Length: 192
Length: 340
Image (cartoon, rainbow over all chains, first blue to last red; front, top):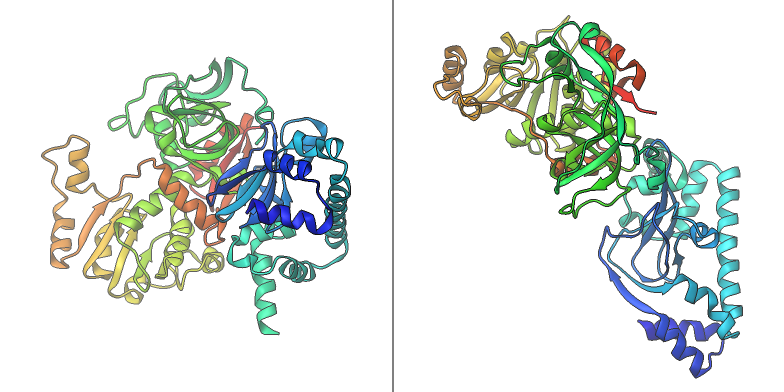
């Protein structure tokens, strides 16, 4: 799987053999069993994960103890707690696996320093960052201007087949609606 | 959750509601400053975010259970809790600091109406992620009673079950649990509660003020008796031949009595005769703390198959008023106390 990851990177940038060797040396493939916690709220964050297969979820817990899902990460998505890494503070997010997943784990500092050592990674990282910002902006705008049913439609489009993997409350807490509302939306859709 | 969120965990003293003597609620309960509990190897220390009280808590205060559960005073009170793990014993592997949990604590660790409670980890489960601390705290004792009763009865799809008092703390959860298992549910309640009990999923709600349940329920596979008194004996009129009557308030069965050291106890003759005539099983369920059972409930709650029902939430400094409210017996759902 590591080879597949390198191959993907090579689609967008050309890598020197030294850069490739270094990247391989800091990449650690892990198979994560279903239901395992990779990052835990309140703890120090050292890793950033790239998903090769499976599905992970990041969420926070509010002061009342309720979960709010920030992101699902499926194949080719990155996931971690960037707030904690950037601000050098304890995690506000928990990351857990919703299915058995294969990830490539990176030490956050090593991954972030990669372009300093090998500038060829710079456009690749910038592209990933931009893709991430676009996704977040879309998510915020959708939350502000779309109905719950419209947000659900987009969600299903963005994450095909995810409904077979996730629990209803994961989706409800991602869309910011109750499980009852989610059921109603599904019933309405089934009628059309 | 961020352990820094569990704000007070470095303190050595804590505030706790304690029973000073048996008697009337207002005269017997008091807030005291006491030592924070220490964890044994298998315990977790929970910073309490919410606790809940049940009918047994009122009976303890009044001294009605002195024979079975003798207390030494002062004694911290209440069994149901939801909060954050802030410390753990050396042998605890299932939990990490910061985990959000819920539990019905064992008798010897009673005292959830306090800032902290130490609980054996076997009694603890992570709380459902889609409900609040207050909702989670409302569940353990009532839901364990429900699950252990209906699991004993072997409830399965297409069984018919009569659940008495569908609007009660246990009844309202039992309806939802029985429906989640695919059973057909009859329940009794008073006129004012008919609609909301129906919303919980009951198939046939019997208004006991206008209808006679005994003429409606015939040959039930299971009767879940949450009322006691004459209802326990009447259960044998509506249960099918070879069916099961499980009770959480009726007379003890002989096996259960032996567990409490009453070797020569005999099931009351009336129940023994009725049960033999119907070839039916009678079982008294004495709820026991069980973290694995709470894990099972966590899934049902997260899948939206069950939901907690809260009557009222009190702040910690009004916990004694919460007991007074409990004593009226009029709560529809659970009475919860929120810590901060």
